[in-house]
Length: 225
Ligand code: B1M
Image 1 (tube, rainbow, N blue to C red):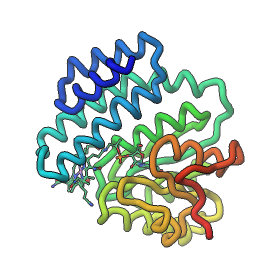
Image 2 (tube, rainbow, N blue to C red):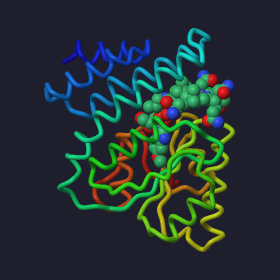
Image 3 (tube, rainbow, N blue to C red):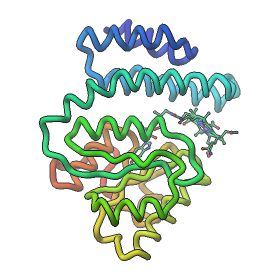
């Protein structure tokens, strides 16, 4: 299993679609935890590629190709994840990547894992304007709204959404969780979010805490204080 996860990691890094899909199928058939496949195999590879990009050791076309392979493998894993969440009580959550931001791989993982924890997740996609989030909260009345941002420039849009919710009189109606690589607990506090989560497993913990399903803890969680 360890070796298969390693092979999957390598295949995503070099954007070898056939090998990555084969390894994902092999892991699923061997009964590997789909969360582990997502986090340890797929997400860790994208993280490493991001670091290589930071150091100038990887280039945009490689990142785009790897992101595509990541998405295809994620689609294979999702049914196994969804099957885990089916028997649990459903809390509605709306999630999306904010306006101006096209990064959705992390948000997709967060959404997929939340489904395994008993949340019904409405994913509004990426590049979502504040008005669309407000409209979704007004119409769907979710317990939680999740805002993902991967760019330092688009983090500001998380604040815009929270302000737009307040302007529409909807802020008390929904708990807001913010996340994404440049986002911090301090930023979450500054913009008046209810919680921050650093990664997908933390997002589950935090979301369950907000709906009274479990105590939140770890590195993420409420932003008060
Ligand atoms: Co872009 N990109 N990118 N990119 N990209 C980053 C973010 C960057 C750090 C790379 C770099 O320069 N080193 C940099 C941002 C710099 C900054 O603002 N500080 C950057 C840039 C500059 C850009 C462009 C401007 C590049 C260009 O065109 N010149 C451009 C912008 C496009 C736009 O959005 N308008 C761009 C484009 C792209 C691609 C399209 C090629 C592709 C995205 C494909 C896609 O998402 N469908 C891409 C990618 C893949 C990356 C990196 C390499 C990887 C991001 C990723 O998917 N990671 C990234 C480098 C990096 O992050 N170090 C980079 C894997 C994913 C599983 O992790 O998204 O962090 P992550 O999600 C985690 C947590 O953050 C958290 O949980 C997830 C899972 O554990 N999380 C949440 C995320 N959302 C959450 C929400 C929550 C809670 C937790 O609650 C609601």
